[in-house]
Image (tube, rainbow, N blue to C red; front, side):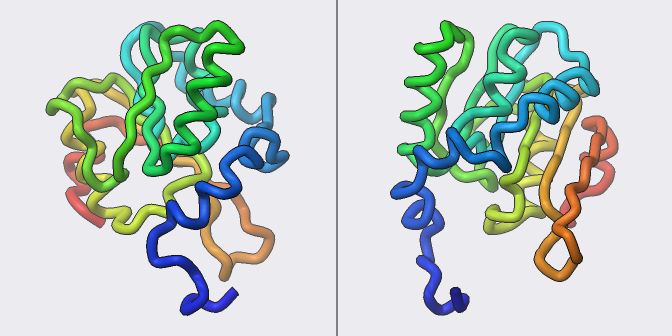
Length: 173
């Protein structure tokens, strides 16, 4: 599809296919999700899952933390998260609608931020990283898992773990 054929608002692309993200083999990888959670080893606290999609990452972190905020710009995705959370008895997942570049949370109020297979959809990754630095508590963690782009053969995944002070030191990209 040519860039000129793509909807200007990404929600127009995701809303009609939201349900497919729940069963997508690329997104529903239990072993990969478990490895992410084990890498961080969170105990309690609040985790923000930005670009949650159908909620796979939020569901993986839910048993280990006090609260997960599943954050996405597409209401249809959040509706799926709400339904599956109920079905699985995950009562600590809160759903919030919004853009990655404008996180509606207090400064230093989040223990960890994760985004998995979503950052390539963000309009301004630099603004997103700045917002993460703002909302993370002083000793918080930030986890990014994403494809590196279409120019890289094989679409390798990258994994970056940074602490909040490193993010603040980076400023914007």
